[in-house]
Each structure stands twice: as structure tokens, then as C-alpha cells.
Length: 153
Image (cartoon, rainbow, N blue to C red; front, side, top):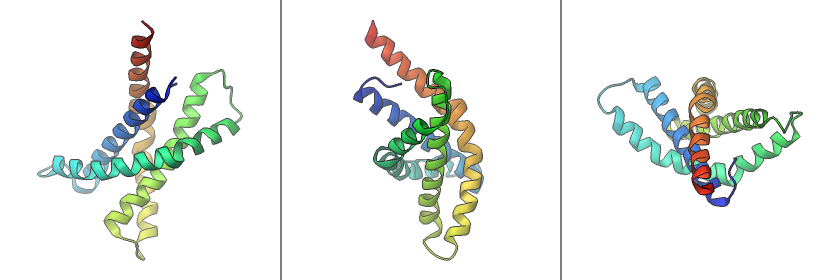
């Protein structure tokens, strides 16, 4: 857990950045495959998506997920339970919101928006859950722990 505003900022930037990058790679592979232009499509989509995801996380999602986690009947002494529940709430909210963003950008706000958004959420949750729980979350916590240990010594 971050122990200062600076650590919280670094942790949030890592989590958001890695999730946006991972999900952008996933979606580019899913929709266009790997081929010419792959890296440029990933790079072009990652910047705006990162800014939107960061704004949503800081303005709304972090506080909401932490509040929801506090209401869950879990053992708060078992850190893994707090991490798991918070991560699942974060992933679910961000997949829902960022899928809406990507659908609006790619489809527009028209009669196709709602069905396309539902499909996007279903496909994105398949990648976001393991990405968050197995790669991005542990990697971000590992870096945060290294920062904390470095400060302690």
C-alpha cells in the first residue's frame, strides 16, 4: 500500500499505464492482428486512452472502489483479501468505462453504440482480469515495495 502522496501517484501511474498498454495491445491484436502498423496503432491509441483512464481513476474510480471495498465483508487484516477485492472492483469499473470510451471513439454515439459497448466489455474483461491480477498488480506492488524499501534504508 502506498504510504505517501508521491508513492500513491507513482503506483497509480504504473497501474494505469501498464493496464492501458496491455489492454491496447490486446485490442489491437483482437481487432487487427499482428502485422504492419501494429506498433504505431498501439502507440497512437495508448496516449489518449492513458489520459482518459488516468482522469477517470483519479477523479472517480479510486475513491469509489476503496469505498466499495470497505463495505465488503472481508478480513481487512488479510492484505490479500483487500488487494483482491479492490483490484476486482477497479478492473470492473475501468473495463466498463474504458470500453465505453473506446466504443465511442471507434463506433460513435449512434444506434450501434450499446451493442458494441456490451461486446467490448465482455471481450475486455477476459483480458483485463488476468492482466490485473497476475501481471500489472503484482508488478506495480513489487516496484512500490522496492521504492518503500529504498526509502527505509
